[in-house]
Length: 477
Image (cartoon, rainbow, N blue to C red):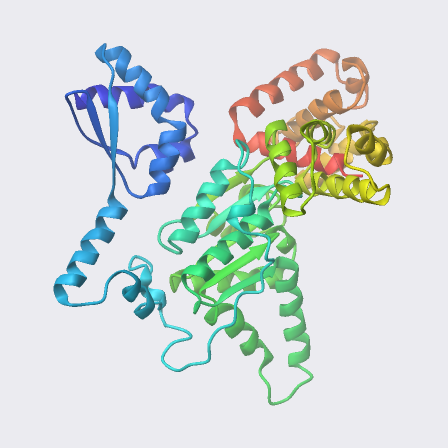
């Protein structure tokens, strides 16, 4: 019967992204099938929940079709079994268990697979203050939807077991889609579990500024080694390093070299590293190959533009947080008209709430229309093909005249097809008109490019992310 399970799993593998297949599908083990019961084993509860939500229903349907009978599924979670056995062992040895064990073992060694080189904040040393993180950026305030589900699950796993397997965690996506929220939520969660760990959150711009300042002032202050202090601050102190907008390292050679050594020092010491970026590692312009390679050592999670249902949920959650009564029809109206990113969505809600408050009336559809009239009127729906060409050329770091010229090698041809696709999607220009703006290309060339990018967006997450990121930038007022 186990062979039936294997065949059922194989039936859905072609429809699963390789990263999801390796991370979520293959770790699930079929222990046995008997009397209509399937016993599965998962390494932890996150794998179990993801598998149940995303893979179990189609696998079960395929299996029941093959076997011509129904089955019930029973899950075993290895993590729970290990914890239970550990409690039994402690009890047998006379060691404290349960809450007593928690109060007596708050040192960073709580994760044996990620040994810490030291235990900070214990043994009489100075206690480490809470991390400098935004209070509202926690997991319970993050709205999960189809476009961010994988990145959210990956962030939860890293927070649950830092530096165990997924190190570094690299989260990428467009502006204002929740990357910083997830990054800081990881910091909050780890701080709750390990209050004596040093959690360092820094923007990449802050890291570069700190590095340059230390380098420049080093020459002015005799007797103080500012560079050693800088390196201690980033290489020795942190148990967790959270860096926002790592793309800011682009074309900064000295800062890249410093971050390279910082990354190595932390990674080799089993310290968790989490990075965010607006592009995939391979797409970062002006970043050294050795850094790009290290960014892919762990796990990569994508945050995409939220769909309509997720945007409505974000608005309702934000309204609840701000203690604003938001009718469903108003939430739907705002979500349907503000599509670019979460920040603009939340800004629109606050604008509506402010208008209703000034007018001393409840929030209604008319109030929402009135409050957002100018905002929606300023939305750049009339984008020009020239602005699209400039944005695409800047993203791929190629010359504008090459994008519009006759060159056919992939480094130029692929961005050109994306520019044609976006021109067709975001402007009212016809295929012949678009072709004429790309060096006199035939309309059939434009049609072929648009169809190819449409297909790649449906099949390739990388291409879809690139197109979404450029479109988001273009739609910014």
